[in-house]
Image (cartoon, rainbow, N blue to C red; front, side, top):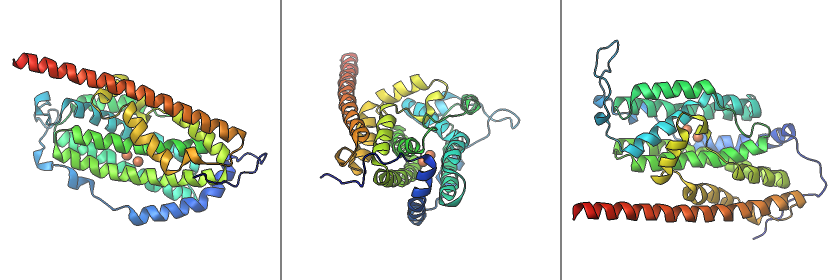
Length: 326
Ligand SMILES: [Fe+2]
Ligand SMILES: [Fe+2]
């Protein structure tokens, strides 16, 4: 199906200020829809408090030891990456409040979103410390280092780029939390991360619907923004200590990798918005759509190579196990 757009070739470019104003009504509608379907939940209900005890230090409890952790090695790595990502909320708030503003429907969304995101860091940290899943000293040192760096959005120059980025990024976060829960080895952790993932999904839906409205208003500019964001996408936690190594382990462990990024994050948003089928574009939009298609084909190819490497790795490990057992 080809979707017609009211594009008029040669029409003037949309500035951020005009777009903010034109999208305010959509923001209000989406905000009300969000508030109606978002279920309130209590972070303290997801934490196994009775498993907790004092740590060493002023209270004279027991220091953390690796054997106390119930979660898998890959679960531990991913939990730290995901929590540190959530921890940088003050910087994310700053970035979106600067761009979207703190007034009207935009401002209400910015504050509500920030409050919901705040729950994620709270419940994850409470769970990790109570269950002694990770080294609390390392976790705090990482948090200090990561937050002290701050976070600057790659897309702060443009609100269309920012809306496009968060539509993909919220889904990426949802998938990362879900897969971490599945692989954590602890059903309590899995349940907590599933609850967070539900929030992230609603955030994605909000931004995805906003992106759809942007396509209707400014199809060429939105297509260019989506292309730029998809081609240059990187996770918000990229600046944290040891991110590259942790990301590589999460890729091997099937928590987040190119295949997942392509199949479970990029494609669902692009297909839902029928981005590759949007018609009536001007030269700028057409070029961006074509480049987006080429990039996705290339990414799929890269993901296939990764799939093969991971399958070969699994086969080697199985063979080694079988030889050791023989
Ligand atoms: Fe979150
Ligand atoms: Fe979110």
